[in-house]
Image (cartoon, rainbow, N blue to C red):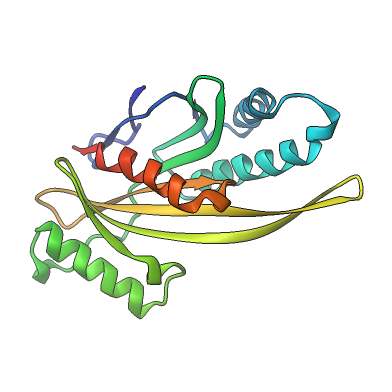
Length: 210
């Protein structure tokens, strides 16, 4: 699946080659987005009574992605249905260009300069996940990646389950500029951190910045 974000012409654009099936959601339309999330959760988990906690957990994660995308005025939001046929892979991808993230005029426009200053600012501000910061470079993109794990407790009908959610931020340096674009991935499969980061890395490194 080839997708491009819906950003205005004046903003940088990220184009992704998304493997498998993904659902494009418009976070600016809460009612439609909620219905699309419900449909995606039913397809991923199924309607069985014993899957109630899994449905609630997944829906909460997808709805969190929709709400965060709307609050951040995101350019695009995609929900993963499956990476390979018949293997459900719950994940979300949000794309936006944060306002006020243009680097200082004194640093130049190279990816090394822009991402270096960004990483240092994250360290100074003690941004959550800064200890995981890692530089990724591919044929089309230069990226600074941060990830973090969140432990969550979900309760349904007296049954409690503990889950781990993974969030990964990919900060793309826009070539020839002092700007960055952010692609945020999230998944409730935090127990599979390394495997999911490998998947997200492959998607991010295959993306192109326009």
